[in-house]
Length: 150
Image 1 (cartoon, helix red, strand yellow):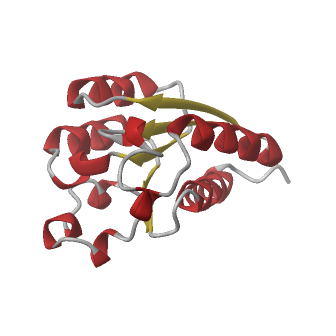
Image 2: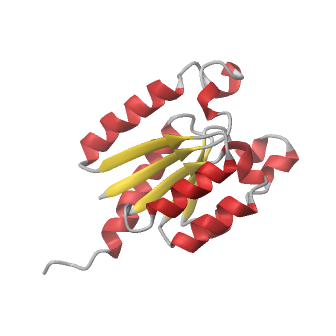
């Protein structure tokens, strides 16, 4: 099983940007933790981060036939990007939207996700563990899609 983990705009600033909300863990620390977790689960992951909407769209397009699932934290693009939403919809790969903070406890404009409607689920508010919860849920979802070997 192979899962693509996409981090969007400003996620490269983890550890520096608003540490009271996001903590001191850097993106590199987060990715290292996720690779260790994927090893525990016996799955393969690939991580990707970009501040550019078009690059995120291209990465999603290129995931078709190469990944079983996607975890995405699009950052602020969550609330603005029809293009990322349409890319997720187009590739028809089970996707989970994750956020480190609870977007529903923040500014009202963050309450609307363009991406959620084309995802199998959304997890927010658990810091870096949001990713692990998303991965675990996605893995279980994908296992249930596979035909029984009985």
